[in-house]
Image 1 (tube, one colour):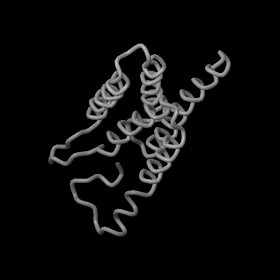
Image 2: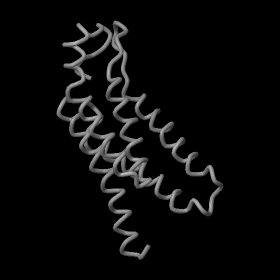
Image 3: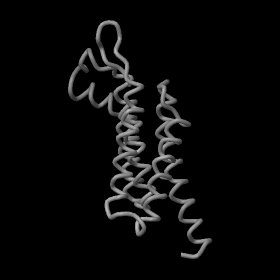
Length: 153
């Protein structure tokens, strides 16, 4: 790749990750959730950066280095997502969907970092569909939501 081509490709990978993370975060912001546009944009960008940095140098690392970085990113972000989960005084668990949104946003960032644009865009579409209409579909077709599940999360 030429320098200009390489810069364009890297910009596309990082830009798409940031845009998708931001779009998912915007959805969370619109619903008053703690993980919003900036946080999820940064999560996706960080995951893409980590993936790009090792994938671009894969020839200088052991064969499993890329998969170890991906594993580390997704495990680490899992802990970040766990930080948003809360249990109220009655024992009900809240913000599980926000935690899952943090994790799946990182996964999409990894996919963007690998340059797999179709997977990233299709995955993001499914995430946004689930976040937008998931609770309503759950409620209409599967009856009342469990009292332990927060339909707004």
